[in-house]
Image (cartoon, rainbow, N blue to C red; front, top):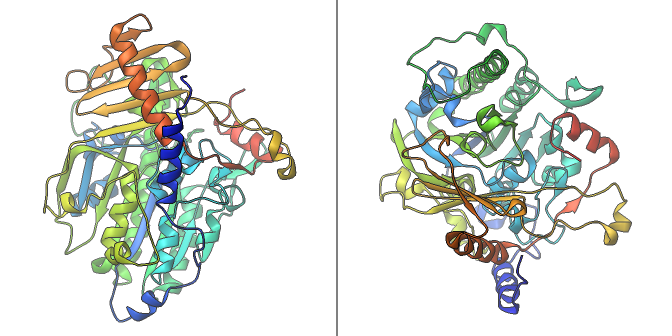
Length: 476
């Protein structure tokens, strides 16, 4: 990697300085109290871990795996080409909540929080500022409050893990998380404005075979190039699809309760995933390091009656980093005029495209993956931690239908035309002695250097690491 220039360093400092959050109250703001008579929409955010877009019926899957999510898409807007910023749970959620790349907000791997002096505000912080009562219900260890510190920004943070994997309590199923979330809704239904975040972990490995959902109806012919054909892959896919159906059923319970409480017409429902999952494509299973479509293309669906027309489809490339500005523009558009808040995003608000006031703008979408982890040293010895520095393990970009993935350590670019090759089976390789390689390498390095702003704060204990290893997040 080339050395950073002084200009790039100064640019990074100025970019951080542009976002003034040094002293920012966690209490409700006067502006929120002054607007108490103005009914803002409730916000229900549903994140489904490890859910790839192309295994939902509404995204073209040949099996009817997701009737509830499909209906939600029919009732609102579906982003057909939404992409994760990073295929890892904790960092991806931070990118959703801040509208920033992992190297900007600092959480590049699981088990870390934003730096204590972070310049970036999160969605729950801003909503709290405008009077929202908030509750979060997470279902996997990478999102527990002690590691992420996201619990500081919610009035209630439920992280009771009900299930075990490899002798440690590390996750809970949809049936475990939905019940507490429903009770919280019942108890707070009379509040002026609610923000509820429910996180489902079920499509994440290890997959359980949910027999009731194991053989969904076939609604179209499967694509012949989608996956290699062998029994091991077929069994893996069957389990994965059954987990989607199982989670979908419990998402339906949550949406039904919103209807029964009379909240539907004034509730913004947002459903998306943090990342996808490799099921055998390119010989790869899992997520974390690879940037193929299977791991970075995710579903994103929104419903807000009276604002979002039913059946809207946005077919331009968008990023999950667009969630923060889009959600806030729909829920509290006045946040942009709030004199005490100066917030900038790397993501873009999609409200104009959703409301059809303007077409979604064409743009490059980027995604990264990082390698390595910090050790188990106590916080007071953090000065000798190995920093998360240097280029990412992989960097990818999508411009229109052209996709490029760079693996710096292997000096290799993979190039795909997704219009002609949506399953990425016809790879064009660029290697170090290729003239185009040098051009692409320089462009990728410039982009990363300009956005490489923050280090995370590691809060992992040895037990945390064992749990994350059991979930496939950490590899030595």
